[in-house]
Image (cartoon, rainbow, N blue to C red):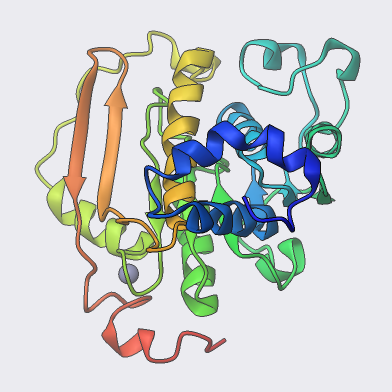
Length: 283
Ligand SMILES: [Zn+2]
């Protein structure tokens, strides 16, 4: 670790830097990765079941600059779902609870809170500000596909990476999807791909018995999805930018099976296709 890190960072991150040597080739590159992590500004959309666990792991790793977006308050049902649950904070906005957590754990925290939903007509830049480096989407209302397409279109224009995690129907075993403009499919590419791939698909009986009461899940499911997402983010910030996988994976909790779909960028995609990526900052 180089001498410019605050002394409290050295002891705190020593074992993590040792792990970073598995993905970087030198101690100085591992330190540089930690520095990029500490400087990266993330907009986290949704501080619910999956979003709260992602946040907790990111802060433990050293991420400390966040824009937090969520309209809801902490409820008793969050005890089994939310990483940041505290009985004394019941009724408080989730974004406030999350900001308190970051401020109590990070070395040099920066938090901005927005107790608002991401609606389909929301001005994304007005919501998260103009200077974030990465967006993480876990907002599943009205549903994750709709909020992701909206954010993906924004990210293609701004040349920003987007990570989509959680919110996948009854199971929370999504391995997450990292969208990097110019390198991976965007949410529109995925929509085009799956519309075709699933045209002959017949619905199977659903693993959740009573869906009228909401989908639900166990903490072990949400931490699984969150950890998969966080590892992708760490690799994205490594010196070589990681091997960003093109495709979607889901771990099915009812039968312990992983479904994996390899999806390539669609050169005719109306959002990120070849005619579009030449003007990534067009508004
Ligand atoms: Zn696309």
